[in-house]
Amino acid sequence: MFPIALVSRGFPTCEHRYWLGSRVFLALTSLLIGLVAFVAFARRPHPQMLACLAAMIVLLWLASRVRHRAPRTASPRILHPAPAFALGAVSYLACVLSLILLAAFRVPALVYFGAAAMISLSLAALNRTRDFLRLPAGAHAALGAYFVVSAFTFLSGAMRHSTESLLTGGLLGAGFLALAFAWRDS
Image (cartoon, rainbow, N blue to C red; front, side, top):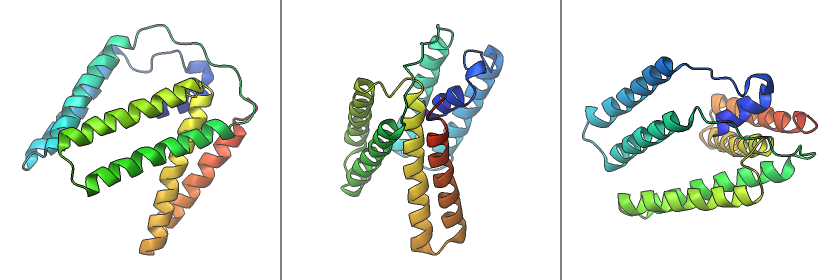
């Protein structure tokens, strides 16, 4: 959802046009599933990789079914991006930290993926009640989540003394903040 929201917000004149024809969509989908299948089966298959492969197949099939539906209308213009940005950041943090804790306790794969689904659905419901899943707020929520990812990259670089991670995390974080505030009045 995040890349779609950001592209729609950044390029509003072409948000309702299809960028891929059916054949290209099918070819790219097949390539993606083939690559993940190769990675999943090239070595001893892990249950998580097989579950991710199954989820990708189901989600890509669902995407192919709904991609020709009429687009939703945009939500009202928001004057300040901070609430959507903050909820995107907090949602991402809550999801990642919860899943890290579950992995640390080595819960069974079925419990892990069930919890991941419940966490994701709960956060989506929270974002939906605030109308942060539609544009333009959805783009600001995406920028908040991406900002947290860049902050993790920056902190990782600081801990490992990696100039590359420090620069990457810092530049991306600054870029996400700049975009959030540049899109504030449009």
